[in-house]
Length: 136
Image (cartoon, rainbow, N blue to C red; front, side, top):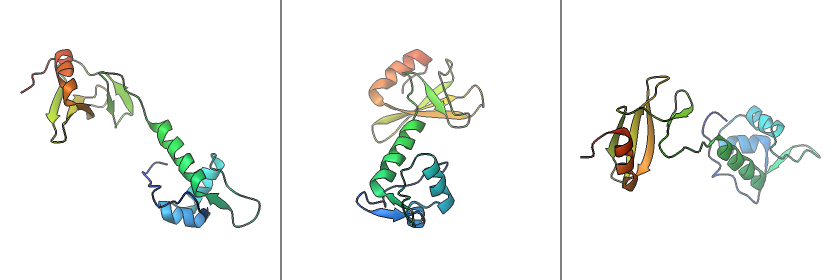
């Protein structure tokens, strides 16, 4: 599932044909077939094949949880190289956001791109002490 899909339109109490589910989720029928091969429960006793909405939601949640990566306390995640790393001292900056959070910006040593991480404002002094930046 390389692109982000939304399972909001799928009702848990309904069953869907492959083409119906593909249209609701916004993918091709071939993608839904490949999900069935990878473990999405499918009712294949007779044609047309059916998929329960509840089964799809469970499958989709499991896939999203498998892609989630837990970061350690002072780690950031680079979207370019798909790796978590602890930035070097002096390579970290921050932005205060109106939502009460902070955005940590760090330079990835592998790609040279900017990696980001959202933190609470109360955690900002710990980050400043560890990486040597001043809080204005």
